[in-house]
Image (cartoon, rainbow, N blue to C red; front, side):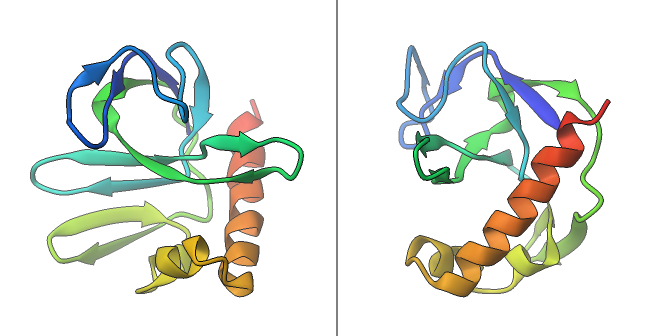
Length: 127
C-alpha cells in the first residue's frame, strides 16, 4: 500500500502544520502498518533520516494526512485485535514489546524490521 501525504498533522499537537522533518507534503510513502481504534487510524510510515545507512525511524501518522495511491496490501500483513485496536502488520511486529526493542536497537528486532520492511516496500512497488 502506498499513500501520498497531502497535509501534515503534528503527532504532538494534532494540529495541521506546514512542515515536519520526518515527512513531506506531496511525497509518496509505503504503509508499513495500520493501527485502528474507535477514535483514530494511524499509519506507520518509514521516516528516512539516514540515507547513507538506510536506517529509518518508522513513525505513526494520522491517516487523515494521506490519500491512497496504491491499494496493494502486503502479503505479510495479518490482523490482530488487542485492547480495542485492530492492527494490520507483520506478525513479528505485533508481539508485545517489539517496537520498544526496535527503538532500543535490539539486533533481533532491527533484523525483523529490516526484512519485513524490504518485503513490504518491494510488494508496494510492483504494478
